[in-house]
Length: 400
Image (cartoon, rainbow, N blue to C red; front, side, top):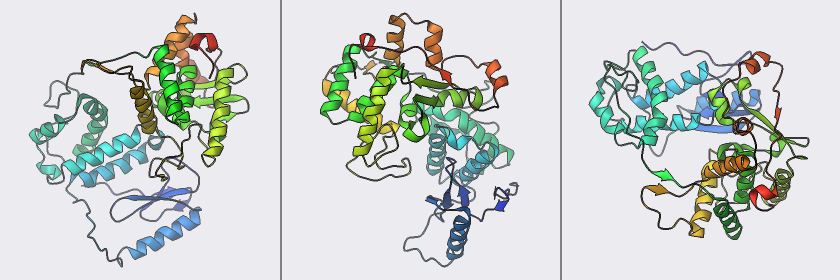
């Protein structure tokens, strides 16, 4: 028997049915769950949000849809995936702020769609294996941990009749096995190729890509961290400050890597930020350091500003510029051309060639072990750590 749903409170106020706080924690942002189980995100004060939700709830029974709304069956994986996602957020409110959470939710929803015709209590390991083996190694690897939790949830609720969790890692139980890791090897990015792609980005009108490539080689930040950078949030006085996403996801938030770059010392980085400001003005004052006006001006569910550059869009820009150089044409099938992430690897190599200690580079790249002392000292606000190492024009071959 399913446990009763907890009342959802916002402070001391009870939220009406189908109204939820913004998963990103933005002030005065809310989401309303429509009858087709899709969410509508909107801005309003708490009082207005409650009033609007109550009005929408009252209209649910009166609306006559021109097209019948398909609601998942209560015995389906899709139905309980929605309940599981809500249950996970209730028990771990930090989840929506994690970069990978949206991908995990989408994977669960797609899984529900794939098993629409099979009720949970009739699902067999053979059915799951057929679906599982249709995925790539990387898709399997990205899903296993969350799907393990999902099936533990279903089995605890008495919904799944399988003998054991098919996504467990225990070898003494029937389970789904991951494919072997592909042997393809990604090409390293040389400094010459870096600047060739950088110049090609200018020809293609991708100044945002040039800025991103510059920030990546100077700070070793990943694409998701770079795409999140905002003028109003991460520029504090004469410092660029960022909590590294992957570090925060792997550790407690206060024990994560919080990096600070003094722009007086990191002059190349300061020049890139000045370029980003000028570009932002051209792109309708986009609050993000990376901005680009797209052909189709829409925000969708993943962007707050029409000119914001998403991580996937940044990768597409890099791929287009890289392919336009023809540097990697004719590679054997066992090898793949470098992606944007290889800029980070190139940066690490340049720091090594400059003679910096490997511990300093590991710290910059957020590759250090969890620091117990920092966890003990936490709780009095975030202490940003000043980064002293940097790359000059000689190290990277030229100025930005």
